[in-house]
Length: 241
Length: 241
DNA sequence: ACAAAAGTGTTACGTGTACACCCATGA
DNA sequence: TCATGGGTGTACACGTAACACTTTTGT
Image (tube, rainbow over the protein chains, first blue to last red):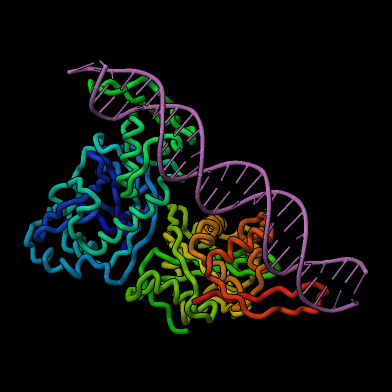
């Protein structure tokens, strides 16, 4: 990675991504452990090049972090209190060099830039968790999938941002039929139901749920899925394109 | 007005306001005629002080433009193509001084700042049109209420922004019961119905509409409104606080 | 008494929920 | 043939839509 040039980016404006995945009947979010401070967590994010649109920037940041292209992505809200200053909590920590940053990439001027006040554009992404190959960003130690129910306290207003993203997801899941982005290509009806239950945190009766989803006419029925269990084999479905 | 100091503001980030009003059975938007160029229109907007939140900035801008406090305000989307550069269309026009700006307020450096690339945060506001006393901003000649159906071609992507705001309004009108912000304190059921018809651009049967709205239990019935017409006098209603 | 429009009531329809039932699978 | 869970069908409740009707007001 080359030197960070602040002139390349829009100042004081960042993009934070709430990357949703689904596994083990849980809705999960990809969060990052920061490489400075003690037990500090945050959402993966990035900055906007002067030459790209904000949607392109979000897609690029997602691509850099997940290795995936054509991710389902939705801008849901901008966040911008005057207290959204990375430095207000960690500026001293960073500057004191408690953890060293790569001086090749970040000089003092760049660190000042990064630790100023930021307005952030919140995007949420829906991915097939198993296809993601998470890559760390600047100031990050590692990334981790965590259930939305068990998120740690994160830096700044990132917990608020996730809550807002979750709310937006709930509002859009049905209307825009985006839930299938969280599942693999083929899935059973039960898996769809359990996904909905994870998102809305409530139960759906199987038979009525099936009728509702099939009534949308967006799924095509494939073969059956034989698991070896001593019960009727469920059908596999695929999202129509 | 004092000198414009760019250091006071967040760079490359603006707020554009879609101010909705309602009159003569039409949903209207307050737009401004620019003081340079020929027949150029845009949305009223402004910039964000380093010391305020984005919501505070939007409320302040609305206050400056309408004279009203406690306006219903909702952030609905951020817009940020790399082509959103005021200068790309008008930079030369501005710089050539086709219309002179107040040099006390804007020096060359400030004009460079203003004509760069901007990401904009879209807010929509709902106001009682008759209470608004529109005040022009920088680079503006006058403000005008125009029906959403008859908007002129505006600068940049402002037509897109209005369309997006209108869509957000439609989605929220019912759910958040915000429509009454567009009406005076007292109103008849027919006026509410006609407002809804203006927003959704379709008809609602009076009797069912009445049942639905009254069923929400958010209105209190006051006296009757005698207009002198030779028909039964309608009730007046008020929004419960 | 009449025209105009406000307001109320009654019925029909469609969606979603609850319940009951049958079917396939492998031990 | 039995237990398990998948899948389908039917009856009911609810909210919305369509229709008919009564009431008020001023000429």
